Image (cartoon, rainbow, N blue to C red; front, side, top):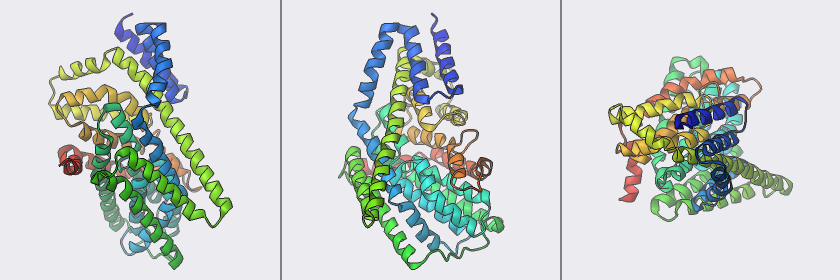
Length: 442
């Protein structure tokens, strides 16, 4: 059978799986299995299905994923984000759009200990949206700030997508985590600047010229200070450990997860029944999320096995190079392809499909794989706030009964141009990505 006919059949199987709402992990495995069957026969397909799951799940570097997921889940159950938000809101109470700025900073702080966009939205969203609405913020403004700032969890380390990118490409996970820090903070600064400008232009949408918080009572401020201290401790363990060379990425993830679990115990130790429930929920939620991620990794490995056997990465590289486009134009075209994909697929699925296909091309052009990884993750981050999938918009809508997905999308899409501006800066000035890793390597 002709190779390109096989590729067309595989893509059709994957597309039908998506349309029929088949879990993406199963759809990837099914499409890859069909491709291997048509390409190499039944025995090779069965060998792939029996071998790949064990090989993929037993890699030592994958320990980072369950540890970072556990750390993020434990940090949420320790109520770190809620506590930090109160202090940040009080500090910024006289700044136009102060509550929105506090939300961005709380999301950035929690992103630095969770690595999950959805977890960031859920942890900060309930408190932040209620307070913003209480002080007169428009519905779409409150929803948009939380949904957009939640995307920081994808880029600011510890970032699970960056870990998976490193696993797929062989790039150093520790270097990738360090490389994501400055771009992540730059994104937060860009969001903050946009909020201040909009709050001055449209004060009615941002609760007036200033926020006056009566919610920040002395006990809550004390708890909030403790919450910020916990974020600092976890951040110091992971990023400080990597930067100083004290920990490898695997060791930092394990120590961070252990510390986060201790924080859950410390937060609920006075209520044994609540402590038991929180620890149980922490473990079960972490196991569930890990099951989903590892299922995607296995399905993606089977699909990638087909693409490699079919020589698709090499064919894709030759075809693009044959266009004789400038190198930066090639990178830009590849990244722009991710935008429509992000409207229909979740970020991890996009990575599993596109990274094995595009990484050889980008590196063959002489570009830094870490720089490309940050751009890639930043682009798939846009899919979290763009319709029709826009996971963050739906999660935000679920945090408050007065919000709908339509209102959430109206709010988050205001930040799309801000993200594109941040991407333009990273694209134009690669040192934004490479500076911190080069300092460590130096």
